[in-house]
Amino acid sequence: MIYTDRAAAGRALGAELTHLRASVPLVLGLPRGGVPVAAGVRDVIGGELDIMLVRKLGVPWQPELAMGAIGEDGTRVLNRDVLEHISVAPREFADIEHAERVELERRRAVWRGDRAPIPLAGRIVVLVDDGMATGATVVVACRVARMRDPARLVVAVPVSSTEAVTRVATECDELVCPSIPESLGGVGTAYRDFHQLADDEVTALLR
Image (cartoon, rainbow, N blue to C red; front, side):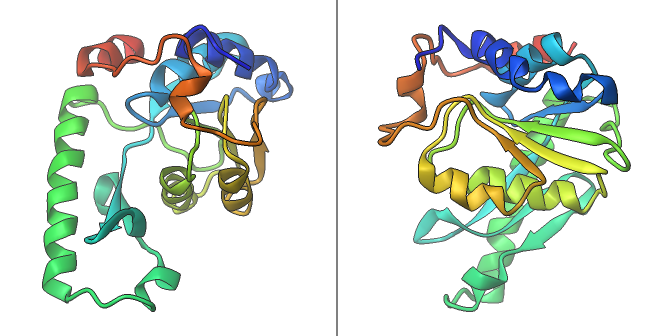
């Protein structure tokens, strides 16, 4: 399945999520690429649109592997399975967390300004990205979201590898993905237009 762009992918994904319409869901896009997809989903199923700001705390020599993750308001989750099998000095961990908090705060200032995040507690939350290759970022986003006590957590992506679907399915209550190719060369291969979004494009969608 090839999508024209992220907005079109979001509308196609929304068609798979119409069973959530009556719940007035909170649709959260993972910046940057997940935001236009989330906006397309919200156009179809209604509800509210916001962003889920998370930063992965990557292992220094293997950044894709998450030692943990941070979210807004000081939220932090640790991946004990990884930490038990690596040796990272406390100071090195602290330096990585500090650097990621600086970037998270920059993004918060650009995309939220003074606006507070919409509370997740008691809501049907739909976490949206433009695709999953390894699923690592979505996993940590799910764990941060769980700490905010949603009533139900749904992950929705237009395309994913089989590996990522298996990994993420255990982190959420429902996973929706219309396209799971046998071999995913990269998320971008599922789109005709997969340009790198600028900060102002995300800001415009959130407004």
